[in-house]
Amino acid sequence: MIARLRLELKSQRLLYAVPVVVMWILVPLVVYSNYLASDGDIFITRLFAINSAQQFIPLFAVWWPVFVMKEYLNAPGNELLYVYRFGWDTLLSRMLTLWIWYGLHWSVICGVMALFMQRLLVLYLLVWAQCFFLIAVAYGVAMVSLNTFLPLIVTVLYCLGCILFQLPVSIFSLEAPLEAGVELWPAAVMLASGGVFLAAGYSLEKRLLKDG
Amino acid sequence: MMLSITGLRKKLGRREILKGIDAELEAGVVGLLGANGAGKTTIIRCLTGIYDLDAGTVAYEGEDIQKSRTYRPNLGYLPQAFGMFRELTVYEMMDYFCALKKVPKEKRPAMIEDCLQKVNLEDRIRSRVSTLSGGMVRRVGIAQSLLGDARVIIMDEPTSGLDPQERARFKNMVARMKGQDKLALISTHIVEDVESLCDRVLVMHEGQVLFNGDCEALAARAQGLVYQVPSRAIPQIKGEYYEAQVTQAGSRVICREPQGFELLEPSLEDGYMAVMKGYS
Image 1 (tube, rainbow over the protein chains, first blue to last red):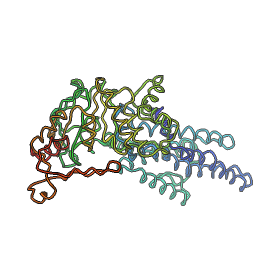
Image 2: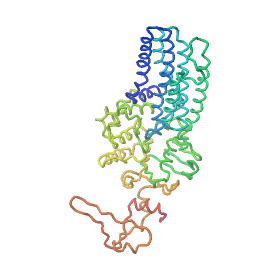
Image 3: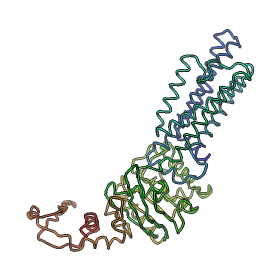
Image 4: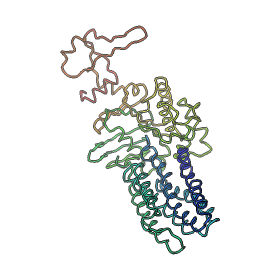
């Protein structure tokens, strides 16, 4: 499955680079601009980084999954992709693999930011959970609507709302997490609700194309 | 028997598309003919395992295809539409389908080249699929259905979009399959393709098999039913008819203008029409 997933990502060509550019160039650039604007105040920069990471990074977590799902749901002759599949070779396993792949990219940039700021463990875990939640929602919505435009729009609108109102990407927390062990419960809730979306999506995926 | 279909029923929504299909398919080239909505694509999707069956079984060499471990690795399938992962190169796309069919890595380059050669696309192996014409993409689809040395090859409208030269090449390729212990099931609207390609024909109508036999037997179903009549007599004809064709060859116009009431030897198309209209 991994070899084929690699080709599925390769077929995205330039689109594949969009989340990487946002995560590895745009977010650090925005954080660095804030560092300069705050006259090198590391406390203010850290708060800004925590908010920016939560607002921008989970938003692009759905990018690769949506374009992969597009081929399975809407490409001409997509039924061919369902003929030879066995066992765990599913869209669900692709979603989880892409979540981990995206999370590894996030780990790199979070590690770099942690070199300059205080511990970012809570932020690190929360962004993993937020990415999981949004990928799960996108997968669930795509399976219900058999469409990939809708999950992309739902995610973008949700995240844009959070950005406009200066909220982290969580429906359960109005404040950015600052201390380890204090604000982790939203992550657990997001993981649990993401799991519900994945389970619901998978039950629909198993029936995909089976009844026309 | 390579594929056995027994009592196959399938509903899509509330509509019953397949109404109890029974057929035995052995090695050779089998044509699947039928009007739009006859259930050709539905039966193909049942044979490929995409659809669950409401009733009946499909068996590959005596074993239910849903349980068989040997069926899918031996299955080649060309859907009616084909064109996913268009930003990959032709080679990458073929490699993708090799991986899907679990073809060992070391066999892939030679197999891909061989299959592309069969559809005359070996010189486009490094081109992106998005840069190919519709007919070329169709040929990539045909090539991928041959990967893995499939024994059962199911093709839905394989010649649609192919130019005459490539259609001829396709026919030659299919002709070479005969005698190779392979089953090629070809769904098409083009009776001429069936006539020139297929050993046997399955005619479907409204979810049922109206005819299952060889091409000569199908043509014979219209024996004594096909006449050539003068065009002036057409208004007097009671019942259905279709007019003789007029074709142009070079500078000559060949007009099959009927000269009298002459009983003709029926073609496969006549047989098909006779079966579909219930005249035989």
